[in-house]
Image (cartoon, rainbow over all chains, first blue to last red; front, side):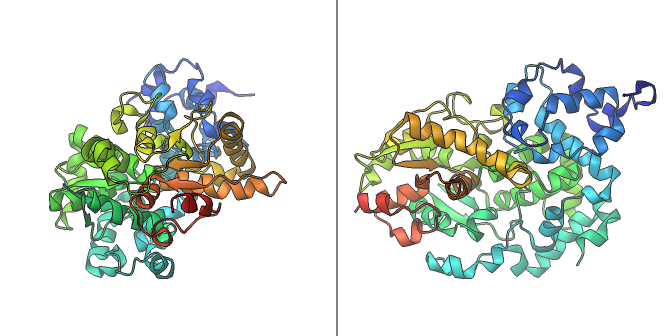
Length: 168
Length: 293
């Protein structure tokens, strides 16, 4: 049973300070068009929004479903109340990261270290097979620039505080 | 007409034949492509946008500033990259506080963000800058007799206010128009506007369900059309609709509809070498390549 007396009534301010989600009237348009609503467990943005407005902090901290979103943004297009559900999904992920650094995406650290989520600089063989022999001006080939990129990101508080995850 | 070519991560690393097709076709159609030195990941939504807004916008501004410095707009094929760069630009342009902070973070790198470079999706540039008549005139080997279905990348449709370049986000027809300009006929089906399901965390966290989701689309194509091929204009749609057919075929069923990025098909029609522009795939493309000989 949910005890609303211990819920964090102001939780929405921490997640969506603009308060767009307060306009949600639970029509479920964001769910019916959502590919990840077919996932197990399903991504049910309407329910996530309701949990935020009720202030169910513990439930939301443990909830993995925001990370199954395909980012198609159909929900943002179709929402009749301008809640921008996709933005709520991203905001929930960021809120989880702020409260639990194990949520910090490893792919963000990969971009910090090598610039990309894929080994763009290690694909010479397959690139040569299609006639692409010129080296790409990727950031790892430009060490001074890469250091500037890292320095830029290290100024961001959450990255600075979790720097061990970003540095080799 | 010159653009900075934003390659993203998947195209140069996993499907460089699409990159080659773009690098051959676009200049031949009058679009000069400039490399973007030191570009980084767009950033993909599962990375900095899921971690911190400041970091997200700083990375967006980093990439956008490269185009800005060259005085050009930015050409993007990957749907996710396009949507991420457009969202970054919209947020930076509309919110002075965000723009100010991004410029503070950029300051030490000697860069700045002013909002002068606009990310354009390659379908948009082909439709509205190159034009269908120029494309028709460039075709040496038309796709006559072939029937295609198209997959619109979600990231070029939604939200329309940020990414849209067609009149309607729910009845787009640009990609079909582009395919017809190559001489193929485009057939329509009930799941035409359904997402491929390949982006984000869905396929990684719920593989069986994501495959079943893609299966509904493929089954609709097979039941309702006589499609010889699927045409996409997004690296994620391309890789997912191609690779998922092999995964689905393991269960005894057989799915073998060749999938092409639009510029690969365009390159073949313009007479470029199939090995260079369309050789990396899971479902064999030979039947289509042979039909163009």
